[in-house]
Image 1: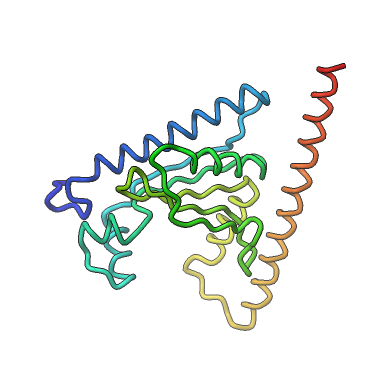
Image 2: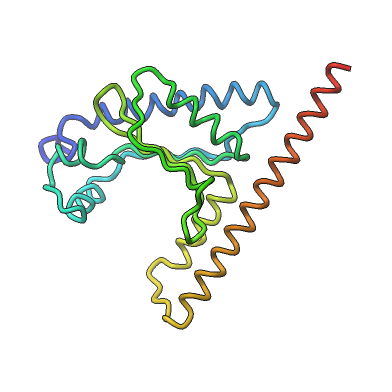
Amino acid sequence: MDENNSIYGPYRPELEKIEKELLDEIDTLRERLKQKNGMDPVEHCLSRIKSEESMREKCVRKGLPVTTESALTKIYDAVGIRVVCAFIDDIYRFRDHLIALPGTEVIEEKDYIKHAKPNGYRSYHMILRMHQKFYAEIQLRTISQDTWAALEHHIRYKHDIGKSNEELIASELKRCADELASTDLSMQTIRDMIFEDNGKSETE
């Protein structure tokens, strides 16, 4: 799209540069942990520059002028990255790595893993400002958390849930989220036990 017609103006290449920089850093830590532990800590990683249509819609929804300034300085998810990790500890490793990058400023953090939303949603959210310019939203989740969020979206998307069933469905979704969270903790414990045993074997 012609930059004169784009809501990002002439700045889309800079957004793409920020996206690539963050993905490269994620890959750097991913490879380091893979070499150290013998397994890939990331199940998958997705990224995108928010589409023109979505960004315009979000400006309208938030009552902002549909302008380049709004898209780049008032809305913080023009660049979006989601990292889905195998284990909870890896989420915090990626978090620590990203906030320590030169030129990175943490604008906002929400730990929905330690403090889940009332509906059971769990994830780690960050808004980073890169090089005193533009923003990126980072979501860090386990496989279980990502699966639950996707299924919850499918269940609710464009479905009119009757009021009589709303409370029961919400309760069941919360129960499923809590059970998956318990499984995440158990799997983390099992992995820690295995690594501890391997560490002992190497030193014996």
